[in-house]
Amino acid sequence: MTIDFYAWNTPNGRKISVALEEMGLPYKVHPINISKDEQFAPDFLKISPNNKIPAIVDPEGPHGKPVSIFESGAILLYLGEKTGQFLPQDLGERIPVLEWLMWQMGGFGPMPGQVHHFIALENEQDRRYGLERFSKETRRLYGVLDRRLAEHEFVADRISVADFAIIGWAWRHERHKVPLEEFPHVKRWYEAMMARPGVKRGFEVKLG
Image 1 (cartoon, rainbow, N blue to C red):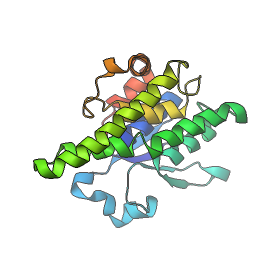
Image 2 (cartoon, one colour):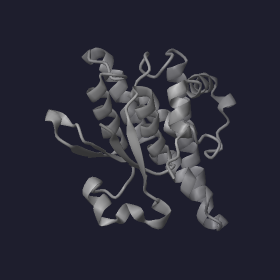
Image 3 (spheres, rainbow, N blue to C red):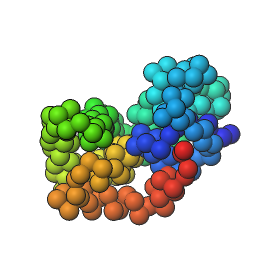
Image 4 (cartoon, one colour):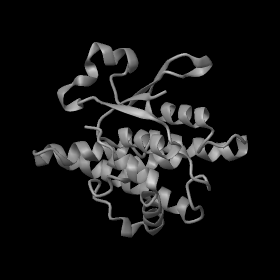
């Protein structure tokens, strides 16, 4: 059955569209226009109690019962478990997937997200400090990723849900003012990811 996918055209939304396409799962997009505060609608609140996108409803969840899931990391782990794809069963192989997924959720998302915020401010006084602070940390995180990818084809050796999480934010590198030429291993990985048919479809699907 078709998964209901509630999203908008954001990095976190793209994580899930990429995963759904890569896993070959049927889904229907329900755009949630966050610029119009649609994420605060009571019906959406029942699915996503934190009033954030993305969220999914799987009519064939555990034990054959419908389940709703919010938070992009939780959705990725659920889909990996459900399909047996892009999430190793072996605990030793799973550890780096979890590490780099949490790295993305805890840093390579919140930090460039702050860059998105401060770079859009018109008042230079308001903008300067925050933009300098969060741009510096964002570049540091690109460096962390670059060092990892210098020794690994994907962040956890084999492609995984962690790569799907990270590509959603690396997709916005131009908005972060980060030329990928300065991080050659990230650039190699980024180009390889974006060349995958499933990833390409995941970015092309209309989310709003």
